[in-house]
Length: 306
Image (cartoon, rainbow, N blue to C red; front, side, top):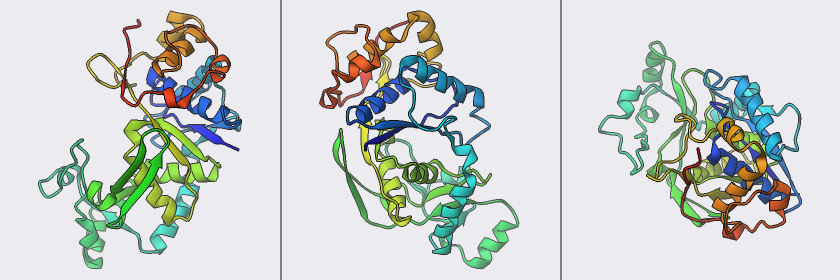
């Protein structure tokens, strides 16, 4: 059976781009007779109050996209002991090491940058001796990185086709646990999707570059990866992607403006290439029309709505 998931971060109310991702995840799973689970990605509890998580559950139900899984949903903030077990396994195998680099050091000249602004870690702390690590432990709490191999990781995205990356060249050794003890998204999402039985992931194309990182962890942890389908982002007329931080088209405003979910579902269906023009319809009605090959490849400009 096809099992998809919603995995929102409750750092604010969902915006139209988040809704698009939820809708396409729901359509993709349901069109195959499957189910959709909900996981709240609240690893950073300081930024993710439960009130926003409660609002997500309510908004999805209002849209007709209620999750099929357990109630209440899975919260990442409750799963640190699970992440710790897998982290310890990698550590026992000598794949994890402490990193003492400050933010300013990471931005220093010896650390090259990818074209999108991502820092490629230079491996500075991988080279420390045991004595050097011990001395630095007395001065500051480290983050923990995993050693990456100099090899090509390839996969076929369900929407964008074949993709490949060499992690040693694209990002370098990446963080598994922050210096404050919070586990990194890359580790948590791999463990959670595997343990929850998720076998297809639909998410924004901004996470396309995270997939080789996650596939690397799936292999190291001997877990079965899902299929991946990345979708275009929603942007404003200037090409800026919608974000919670900027309060772009939050669902609270959309609910107030439209009054019912059908116009919102119809708008998303139009933007996703499923309708020739926006017209109100339910998610269940859209399911009968859904054709994944019609979803655009390029990012989608959202018209002025409010």
